[in-house]
Image 1 (cartoon, rainbow, N blue to C red):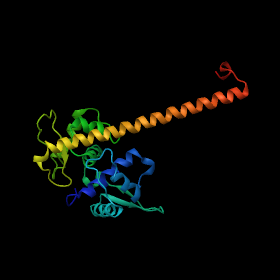
Image 2: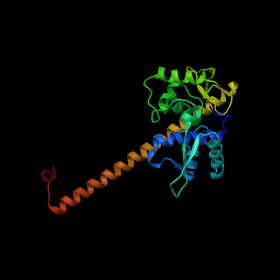
Image 3: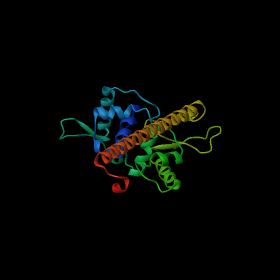
Image 4: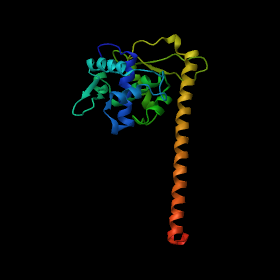
Length: 226
């Protein structure tokens, strides 16, 4: 249990460390530069931030005081790792949920289940709800269920690691902003996938042309290659 609430910068730093541990394990623990890039990432972030390395380092120092981040020695480049589960006193499943709430803002249970897929694979929505309910009843509470806004079918959840959430902003313009940012993030990810698909198609075409040229030079026929 932390002794105080986190600043937005500290929350972003902690969440990025947890995320990158699972998504880029070969680069984890993270250097200050890699951590800053992760904090300022434009996709899968709400809100998008523009933090300097000095601001990220300040966040790291604050988290170190709370025993939520450790500095890793033994490398010429200083690296950092998180201690979220022990520092927050919650299981890894709850860490995954809190991480996504810190990175992407308020979300429904279904959105959380989708977004935590690479951190923890929840069997079903009831499992997600179970951990959220547990987090909401801790002392102090770690998450809160937000009131449904106009036209919303499912309630959204928000983390409380940075303090109380203004319930009046749970719907309306902020919801539209959140949805717009979410749509933009998905659009960016889709564009990246399409670009990768195009790159692979071009690489395959190049390899095929190379094989055909070599087979022609060697006097091989299609049956010989088979």
